[in-house]
Image (cartoon, rainbow, N blue to C red; front, side, top):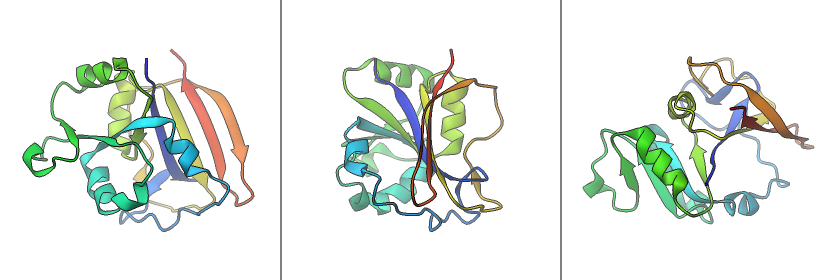
Length: 171
């Protein structure tokens, strides 16, 4: 079965975007091998707000998963032929997606979608790239919801001050 992995950059104080949606605080680090990261996935799953940002920067995602799935009740599939849109029965659709053959699924951005899928017990791992910055406010990694236990699988400190943390969900 494919794994649903929440992989996201976060500030040390737990924000995935600034208070105006900005991402300029994300420190580039040449030691991060994005090609190797993207090779682990063949599907990217995101919410509509994340998609609105990502689609304007799609060239930045060259080499990323070719299949983009967006959870949205407002996007019209006829206007977005390059993506798949999930509009209803999220739990069943994601369970079916995970059962398909293929590589892992990257749950990309979107703290609200992460919370929803976590509470549905569909997320398999949480992989945080912690940036050496305190934003003070912004879009949180995750909103309020059920408690989830995590088990640290890997931690890595980079010369740039970035800390990479990988956790599996304890079932």
